[in-house]
Length: 231
Ligand code: CA
Image (tube, rainbow, N blue to C red):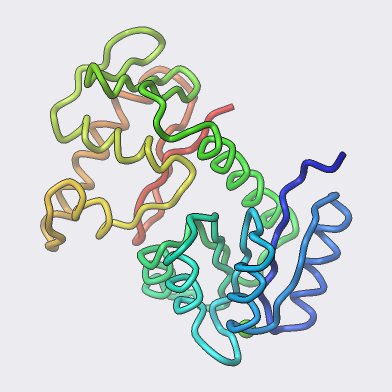
């Protein structure tokens, strides 16, 4: 039985699409393809894929519009694939609800690595987001008790740091933009909120990653942060 997820590839550029289909095929993934935004929305609603790989520059509409449409009915993971190197396009896509991004040109290894990250996120989502205790490697967050632990030892977190760790945990595997985080934590997104966020993240990180080699929080320079799912 093939328990690999079904991937929808949305890409109008034939060589890129062929690279992706060949890669997925040789790695035993199931996939379907779409060449434009309208087809992407149709395939998404009729086949309910597990993961969408979405090119942003489509012939009929902007990929961000496709994300917004899909997000009206589904939380399925969407990985944006874009030739645009500008951070603002990635941020716009992430704020519209994308989970992750890959910049063209990308390597086959990078594509497969991003799919693995997203599959881990998918398994967390399927395990149930309602779990009262979040577990990730040696880190656990007991939502009911309002405490976080590392290797069984309670972490001494400030209220903001605790809110941050909960937000990251609830979105494990997903890249969260500065705007998304500051709006959730402070209810606004001013320039100085982003500066404070950087400070809070640095102290949280120090508490989480002290002494150990495990990286829990990944920084996306100019974009935001992601909590990595630790094996
Ligand atoms: Ca394109």
